[in-house]
Amino acid sequence: MIPRRRDAEQSERGGPVPKTIVITGASDGIGAAAARQLARRGHRLVVVGRSPEKIRAVADETGADCFTADYSRLDEVRALAAELAAKYPRIDVLANNAGAILGDRGVTADGFEETFQVNYLAPFLLTNLLIDPLLAGGASVIQTASNAARLSARLDLDDLDNSRRYSPVRAYGNAKLALVLFTRELHRRYHDRGLSAVAFHPGGVSSNFARSSRSPVGTLFRTPVPRLFFQSPDKGARHLLRLVTSEPGRDWESGAYYEKGKARAVKAPPVDAQLWDRSARLAGLEPEQTARG
Image (cartoon, rainbow, N blue to C red; front, side):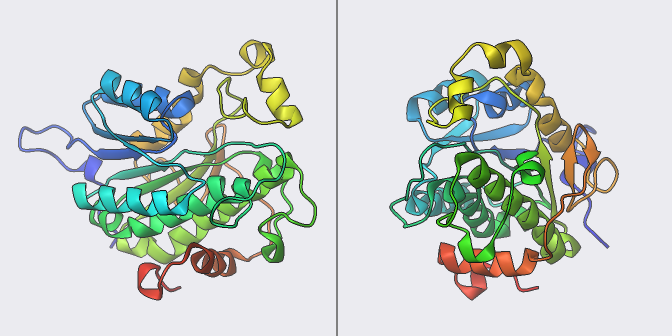
């Protein structure tokens, strides 16, 4: 029997119990937009961003707690996880929303290709380090992925660092595909203990996520075109909001990937478990810090 979600419980006053919701990548874009809308519903919000000034502004506007972490540094991700676990023994939703498309191939201080680390390895590490409060909350782990996982990915377990054939778009697609496979494996390992996991494509959003990129995509995002043809962050956040506020098993399928509100198959070799084990080694996780299949 899978424990029921906290949002299905009732408070002493007869209403739904407010959730503790952690949103990363909440400095702007759909993360900030989702935080603003969730704040109106009375949930306990925790927002995470790279820029102290930007994330503080979102926190002040929404009444959220705020934390900073640069995902290009895994020591900051570990420190973030320790702070969150100490302050929130029960987390109902973890929205892994942080990410970016970058330009020329860069290597982080940890020695990994930057797109891979920021978009995939850092969220993988954070989720694993928070597994106890996530299980305590019967949590939903919601991953902001991309249709690039279907359209431009060529994931190679022997080249997760994208060292053989690098392009910004392919590296981004590979990282998002890894996130989808992580979602499936997270479901397989933990769903019978009450945790649910889902990945989704928010659609084209006019935001800052690619504006610092020196790639052609970054050039596009520095023009007026996204504002003309892409969704606003408020509209782009609606898919995230739906997943946060609805119930897995009833409103969406745990372990699935969604586009436009519908589950969508992603063609990929069946390497979910191998990717998990390799990622755990790369992130420096001890055996007791990650579940066994």
